Amino acid sequence: MAMAAAAPVFQFRDARWLPDPVLGPSPAVRTPQPVPLVIDNGSFQARAGWACPDPEVPGEPLLRFRSLAARSRGARGGAGAETQVGNDLGSPEPLRWLLRSPFDRNVPVQLELQELLFDHIFQRLGVSSQGCVDHPVVLTEAVCNPLYSRQMMSELLFECYQVPKVSYGVDSMYSFHHNRRQEWPCNSLIVSSGYQCTHILPVLEGRLDAKNCKRINLGGCQAAVYLQRLLQLKYPGHFAAITLSRMEEILHEHSYIAEDYIDELQKWRSPEYYESNVHKMQLPFSSKLLGSTLTSEEKQERRQQQLRRLQELNARRREEKLQLDQERLDRLLYVQELLEDGQMDQFHKALVELNMDSAEELQSYIHKLSLAIEQTKQKILQAEISIEVDVVDSKPETLDLDPLGSEQSLEDVESIHEFEPLFAEEQPEAEKPITTVEPVFNLAEYHQLFLGTERIRVPEILFQPSLIGEEQAGIAETMQYVLDRYPKEQQALLVQNVFLTGGNTMYPGLKARIQKELLEMRPFQSSFQVHLASNPILDAWYGARDWALEYVNHEEGWITRKDYEEKGGEYLKEHCASNVYVPIRLPKQAPRTTEALAPTKVLAASVGNPCDLA
Image 1 (cartoon, rainbow, N blue to C red):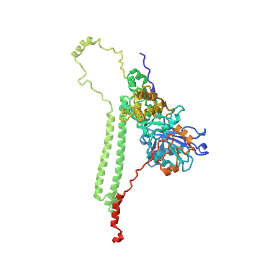
Image 2 (cartoon, rainbow, N blue to C red):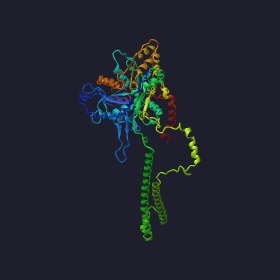
Image 3 (cartoon, rainbow, N blue to C red):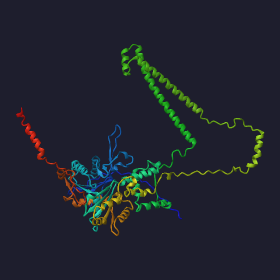
Image 4 (cartoon, rainbow, N blue to C red):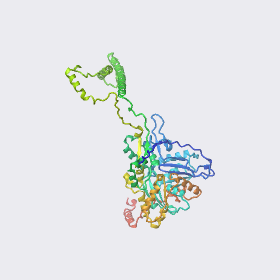
């Protein structure tokens, strides 16, 4: 059997984020009227750009940065706290404990942090209006976004930034309309998987059926944490080097979804398959391991140097303490001389400065300080003597191997000569050197992470959340549950266009796995089609831009400031890619009946006029 090819070794890029440049305002975005500003407000990454038909303005996001912010405490006595947003962080790992996100799952709840993200976007895009943002804003939001979250977002945009109008839409719906072709039906079953959540969205006649949408609280974030725990348990020696950023890089470039998970695990049991498919990730390391090339004499010398440094440090500290105690003793003796000379006023003033009450206390303190000075002097003297003794005794001692004398008796010598012929043949030759085989330690291989079944085990949590202890249904079960809520005719329409979008759907093999699951759940000889978005990450922004260019001069879908003031911040104007607006319905108070009012009237009649009673 031919030997399997050696597995490739991959290097971690550990790429640093480059700060976003401050773009100059283009005249095309303001003439003849301000063009819409499109913001894809994702929980993993925010994307912003202009919806401008002018070819001079790029038709792609000008800003792409992580939806993170960090606020440092600032140096003592220096400048105040510094806030960094998105790509200005450089690298997330040194600031991991300071990072904050405005999102809980995929819903923005921390509006202070969301304001920081908006400030970053408006500043870097070069919005030149003073005191306000006079551009219409198209903003993505979560599926079935809570009214409170939309209310706070509208309040932030209208009150803080004074935007003229705003439109909200669902990111996966924008992606669906952007990828929709002429032959595609208006009905679809969208599978949108992102950083925090996965959604199953049924679309009927081009509109979202919000009543039957389902959410799975699993995404790329949970997969990265799961992979980090697996590798930290597998390689406890590299615990600190296995960071979340590196785990995300492994998920993006080295993971895939198995079409049949059990069969794929059986393949990995084969040593040949393992050797040819394992990915080795090289961690950074130093070619010289600390202490590995030092001999025993060098180690002993290093210990002696450290001991000498400690002795010198202790001696310096004792001398400094002795000097301070001597100065304080001289001060106390001077105060005592004032008492002996009869200068009572100066003596009492000096006692107050020393925080003492009487002359007895002064004498006691002088006695204690004198004893402390004498003890310090003795310690210094003993330390000097011990150093001299160490230098004298540092010569190696020769062991006396023959304490009873080196002379041997004649009988012993004769007995030795008698046995020499017996052992002459077994004595080794002195000319042949003895070779010892020492184990070879490959330092580079020690700093490698071997990715075997982890490549398929981690993405599998989308279909089997029980792998990480989550009591949730996977994508296949949730799709089946959503389809069962419709009659068979509508089920057949929905599965004709199963659309995959979102950054977490970019795993190789996901489309084939969805096709396999549909083949198992659908009736015999039924047809279905699965489509993957052309760009699962950016198609939501492209779809929002397409909508903004088409409806910029229409009233459909736009919430004006007048609508905000009259109908509240939670108000939503629906359009083809939006959520369904469900207004807040307060329970009506029951009218007070005549039977309930009768006792009140009788009581008022019995009481009568207070003046008459007086």
